[in-house]
Length: 302
Image 1 (tube, rainbow, N blue to C red):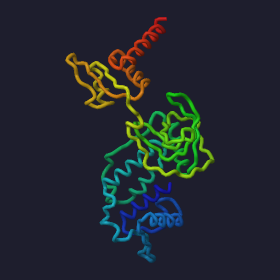
Image 2: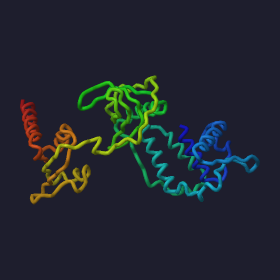
Image 3: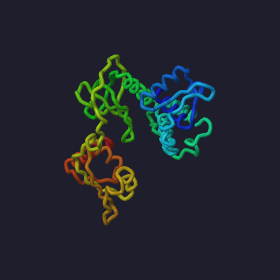
């Protein structure tokens, strides 16, 4: 992709005083004309590149702009490359790995030492997730609307959106876009999308800031929960909510107090603990669980 190549060219020019167009073209496997267009794009982005003809000529960053080559430190470059590698873990390709190899060709102060940060964003659903991510990226780049079937706790529906951001958060992938049905910005989880289609409808970008993904806004509370857990559940509570989510009782059991967002998710979560968890409050949900367990027991006894 062009943005990958621009980052690579900038990294090379920060590492070397001068690089020739043929050298860059060979390294990034494009034509010299493409390199010339990339140089022009970097200049338009505010990076002052200069070209000199002759035997010692080539492309370089204006000397006074280099800021002693501290624009990217070694640790910052390592973090960038760790991020690029993580994108390969999602797509199942080696696109970013190839870019890293090109950046690390030869000796470089930026590339010394081994990688200490490894990020793997892949999931059990990579075979279906990767094509969705590529299609959404294509839609965002081309300002084209997306259509898909969406499955939510409220039911199934067909949605059409103007996509703006691909987001990885809460251990899952989402797309943030303007929903034509709801007439507002919405967050859609990729694993709940099916029959994703890139339409021919081109949209004009709306004025928007970075999406507000505050946990309280996306997952509003409202259900005040009190649960008693057996001591053997401590590791899960610490992993999912931290050490401050419970108070240890005299008998060793753990009193868990929190605001929960959704009744169905709460019940499903509690059932994963089986007999090791007892919901104390709210009383109404406690009663629902009691009735549901009775019906379940009747099925198994039958």
